[in-house]
Length: 76
Figure 1 (cartoon, one colour):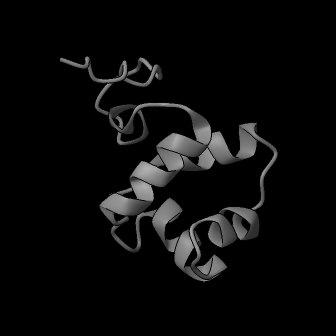
Figure 2 (cartoon, rainbow, N blue to C red; figure 1 turned 90 degrees about the vertical axis):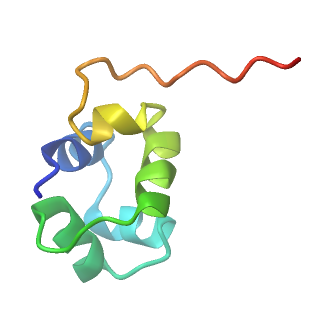
């Protein structure tokens, strides 16, 4: 599955594939495969990218057009 938003967010933030790969502690080729949908992106990487770009994981995965991250959980 191709996740265009991962590439779009990277470009919008003026980051290179190498910079994001280093942030994820992986190789540039591996990250390129995530962007192009050649390799399935692991959950931990989706979460780290959502944190980096301050968006929701659902936005990254194309499940919503609202980029806002969810509110923090309420404390009891």
